Amino acid sequence: MRLSGLQREVLSLYRQCLRESRKKPEATRSHFEAFARAEFDKHMAVDKRDFAAVEFLLRKGRRQLEVYSSPRIKDIR
Image (cartoon, rainbow, N blue to C red; front, top):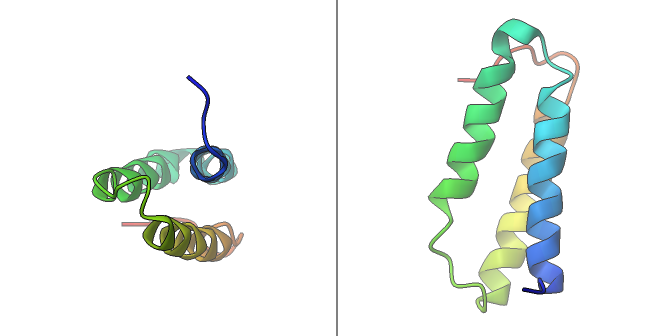
């Protein structure tokens, strides 16, 4: 199955989240991974053809990733 451009972007964002979680302290790494998984699961029901919603969630996710990838942030709840 071939993925659309938006689907590839979502997958890419998820991978970036997991990569960034590896840079966090080992004790809290699982918190970041669980948070990322929960955020993606929360929006799993969004219709893949609802481009406006998907693009909005991508922008929101990228902003969150930018904030949480800061070295000052050591844990997430």
